[in-house]
Length: 211
Image 1: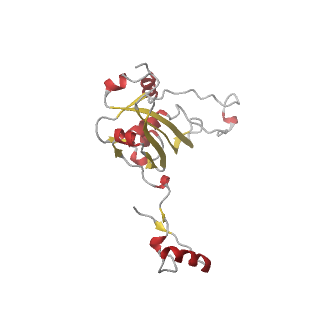
Image 2: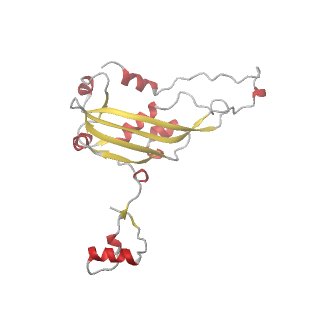
Image 3: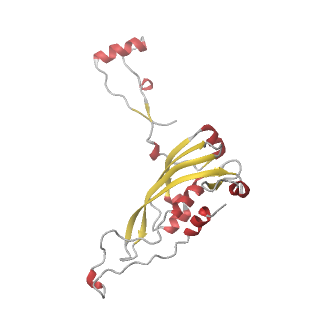
């Protein structure tokens, strides 16, 4: 485990107190100080792991994923810079189903459909999935549970997280404030933006369809 040691100068009173615990030493050495590790959201999120074992053990994971490491998401937005913050908790619900819950969020750049300039969009996805082995196990789930077909052994967390993020992309994007001079419109009024078909809505429909 890597981290930075942080020690502050000790005054005489505190030195006397420490002497009672360190016996033959009147001051604290670096290895007596608390190990200050990096904040969780500054750590890379692990790419692989066994979700079933994690569920049995109640494992919680958090960290960041570079958008550049999510190829489908990088292709769907403008540019691959930036990170996605992820927090997942694995467990077993009251029905004995292995589940994973959490969220993923980050800022991405999209093209405004009014001015065709870039607009920053905060992409957020709440994750709540049942961990299953195959299609048959997915069909046997209660209707309120969406499946994550993770297969056996180690699974790719990035693939699952990326799919959830793709479902959260808006059909169209535009600035919240007026971004085009109204005099450029023939009617003098902003033109309403019609929603275009979002190819990732198909995934959402499949997930919400009756099992």
